[in-house]
Amino acid sequence: MLKLHLLFIVFLFASLAPLIAHAKRAAAPKQPAVQARAAIVVDLTSGRTLYAKHADRRLPVASLTKLLTAMVVLDSKHSLLKPARITDADVDRLKWSRSRLPVGSLLLRKTMLHIALMSSENRAAFALSRDYPGGRAGFVRAMNRTAKRLAMNRSHFVDPTGLSPHNVSTARDLTRLARAAYRYPTIREFATSHHKLVLGGEGPLVYRNTDPLVYRDAWHVGLQKTGFTNEAGHCLIVIATVRGRPTLFVILGAPSVHGHFQDAERLRSWLLKR
Image 1: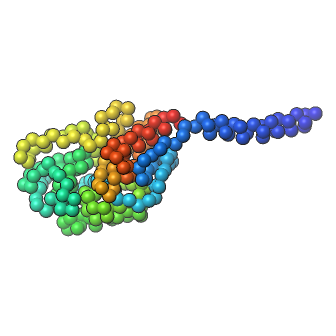
Image 2: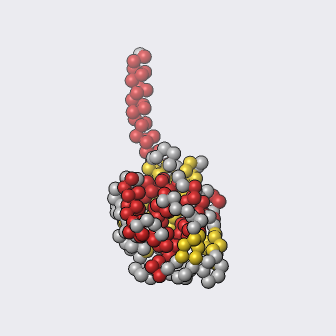
Image 3: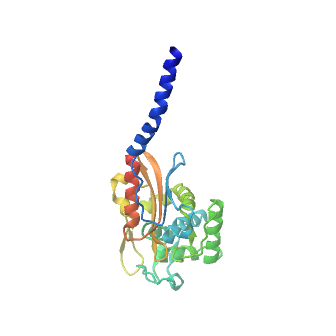
């Protein structure tokens, strides 16, 4: 009799298991419709990938490059309190992108690094790369050495700004870059600051952060970088706190001006509902 009773319980659980599994799937929130060409979300505490879309596709990365640029600048141990001048060699002749720093501007290297990270100031990034042992070519070699050390095996860089479409990486490789950059207090501070008053050009300039997420208290942003070129689309790296855990978002190739931020918001909302 006991054996029959046990068999009935086993049969009952076997019959209910598919229904329970289906109910769990139905209750789980549907994955968000991410518009970007590639994206990945990683729990930095566990290292677990929470979401991935074409995470190994090689794509241009625009100014996300500047996180690597900042690492090379800081690793050089060259004093950030030394002044440097914007010269004609720092003018973008590939995209002819705008800059608020006129040729001749004299700034501390610290200020240049700050506005390169916070506001993607290309002339500042170019000047920092030129002021390096071996000049800009030596700087780019150091960028690729650093990428190789980080096991960014599908990445390659040819300039310090990201203006070149030949600066390429993958969403997964960029998680390695973001993790490494996050270990630098200076990068975290400069990348997440809200504004910076800059003197040294034709008059005082106020630079503001290009990432609206840093102004949103709910996000608790610990690191960020935005980027855009026509080839790369709109790109974003952000480390933020989600349910008390540091979480890394990498978004590449969003098609619209606010698309990368909208994708990040969708992904965060989805994580909060899981």
